[in-house]
Length: 130
Image (tube, rainbow, N blue to C red; front, side):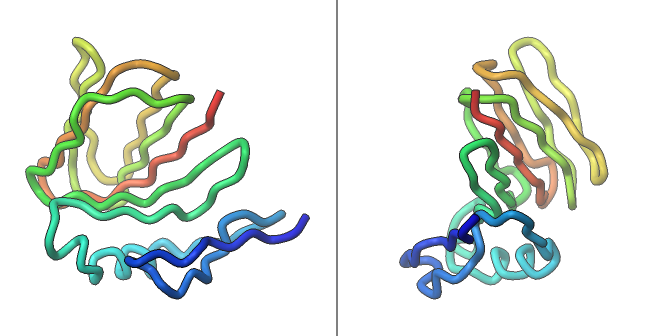
């Protein structure tokens, strides 16, 4: 399998991250540091970076400032959230849960949900399209 790299963007002009490979290692601390140093983090209520993307799975590192909300939306596949730092509220229909550092949540495809950061929060979002 040929390794695939991300394309350069205005936010990340270097365009040199491995996005898909037979085996990939991902250093979360360095990516957390990177997204918290970027302009998007300084000027908005969130920032994110795709760490891995292939036909069967995507992994995104997301950072939210305290009080930031991701309005109700759906996903085109099964998702998992793993809290790396902080604390958040997760709402799916009439179910609300609070997730703390070290906790995970899974959700099936197409279920409307929203997220709100109780404090500054960093989480891994994994999407498996179906």
